[in-house]
Image 1 (cartoon, rainbow, N blue to C red):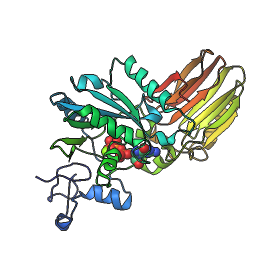
Image 2 (cartoon, protein in one colour):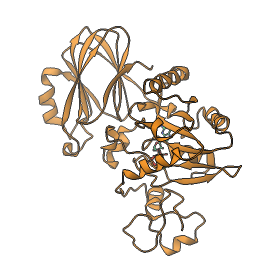
Image 3 (cartoon, rainbow, N blue to C red):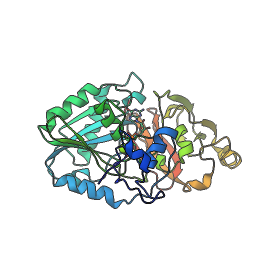
Length: 358
Ligand SMILES: Nc1nc2c(ncn2[C@@H]2O[C@H](COP(=O)(O)OP(=O)(O)OP(=O)(O)O)[C@@H](O)[C@H]2O)c(=O)[nH]1
Ligand SMILES: [Mg+2]
C-alpha cells in the first residue's frame, strides 16, 4: 500500500474522481502526491473532500492505546475556538504538551508569559493538566527552539502525536521539523486527510493527524475565495474606535457590534488587516446593512452562504479589561467602563468573553 506524502491518504490509480488518485506517470517522482495535493501545491487550488467526522475520533481514540507524548496545537488567535473538546478523555494517560501557534500575528509588545499563563488557566478551567505550555510561530519560525526542546524533553523516547482542530498549523509545524515543506499545508481547513508518520532519529515517529472540524468557528464557513480576507497572514494592526452608546461597528458582512449602553470608551478591533470595518449610528445600522451587505460589506459576497445572524448580549463588568472573541474571526478588546454590548454573529458561531490578553 502507498500513501500520499502530502495528506496521508491511501493512493489509488483506478478512479480519478475519488480521493487519493495518482496518475501512473506521477509514481516515478521522488515524492508521491495525490492529485488533490498536487493541485493545492502547484495551483493553490482546493477540491473539498467530504470528511467523515468519525475518522478524527477514531484516530484520537487510538492515541489513548499508545505510549506517547501528545502535542495539542492551538491557534493563539482563537484559543477557545481551536481547542479540542474533551482532549484529556481522548488521549488516555499520555502526557499533553500545549503549543500555542501563530504568535507572529500578535503585536510585538505582547508578553509571551501572559499568553502562556492564559493558556494554562484556560486548560485548568477545563480540568486539563498539560506538562508544559509553549508558544511560537511554525510558519515564521519565531521562538521555535523552545518548542523543539520541550518535545525532546517530554517525549523521553516515545512517539509524538500532533493533534488539533483544522488549520492551527500542525502540518506547517512538521514541515518546520523536516526543514522541507513535504507535507501539504493550505489556508483551507481540512488539508490533511489521514495520519502521516515521520521517523525520528531513534526509530520512533512523530505523527501528523487530520484536523478536527469544529463548525463553531466562522473561518470554517467562509468560501476558499474569501478566506484570504478573514484569516490574518501578518502582524495585526489593531483598529481603535472611541465609541459612545448607540454606535455600531460592522465587521465586514460577517458580524456586527452594537454598543448599547455605557460611557464613551475605546474598543480595539483585532481582525485580519484586510477585513473591512465600518462605524455607523446604531439607528441607521439596519438600513445600512440592507443596502450594503454583499457589496461594501463583504465577505460574504453571497450572504446566503452563512447562517442568519444571532444576537449575543454581553455585559462588561467594568472591573477589568475584557475581550469579546468571535471564534474564527478575531476579537474586540473593550475599555474598562461598565457597559452593555450586543454582538450579532452567524448562528452557531461561538462568541465568548475573556479577560483581556493584550
Ligand atoms: N500566521 C501564521 N500562519 C500560520 C502559522 N502556522 C501555520 N499557518 C498557516 O495556517 C494555515 C493552516 O496551516 P496547516 O499547517 O495546513 O494547518 P493544519 O493544522 O495542518 O490543518 P489541517 O490539515 O486542515 O488540519 C496555513 O495557511 C498556514 O500557512 C504561523 O505560525 N503563523
Ligand atoms: Mg494538516
